[in-house]
Amino acid sequence: MSAEVSATMDFLGKVVNSLVLFGGLVLVLRKPVKAMLAKRTADVGESLHLAEAGRSEAEARAGMSKAKLTGLATEVDKLKAEAEVEGRRETERIAKAAALEAERLKKFTRQELDEQVRRGVGELKAYAAGRAAAVARERIRRRLTPDAQSALIDKSIDRLSKLHEKPGPR
Image 1: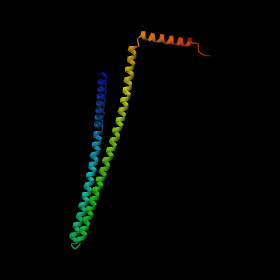
Image 2 (image 1 turned 180 degrees about the horizontal axis):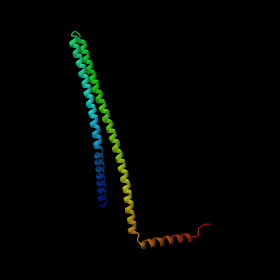
Image 3 (image 1 turned 90 degrees about the vertical axis):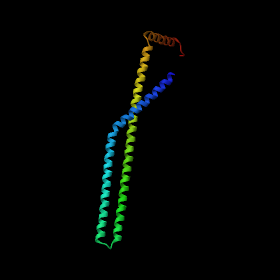
Image 4 (image 1 turned 135 degrees about the vertical axis):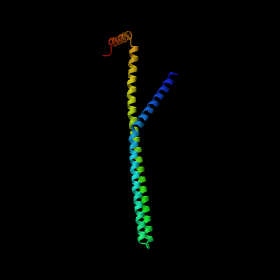
């Protein structure tokens, strides 16, 4: 029964420590990651805006060419197609850049979490070792009374005397 309670308490302690650790990580990393993501979102939005502006500019040029050169419908169609292809390329480039940035952030976050877990485990081990040594020291102090200590010393002296008295092969 006592072993089950001890194991349960040990498990609950580990769960609480893990919750505290991950809660601390969330508190510590939330603002920098949020700021980084907000900046990246703004950068992506600006890139999309620039791409849209480029696309709008290309379409405007195509319209002006059509108005000036009514007989060149094929040239206008060609310019539109180029603008659409460029817009798609730019959209794909932005999407790839965003995916790469998201993957980089995930990797960075994983590394940070792993490092925090390693540090937490090390600290937990050091604390557990210190507590175990303190408990052992206290148990020894309680069990080793002055009478018990005298008895141990007397036993040791008797054993040494017997070892010294036995004639050994020379």
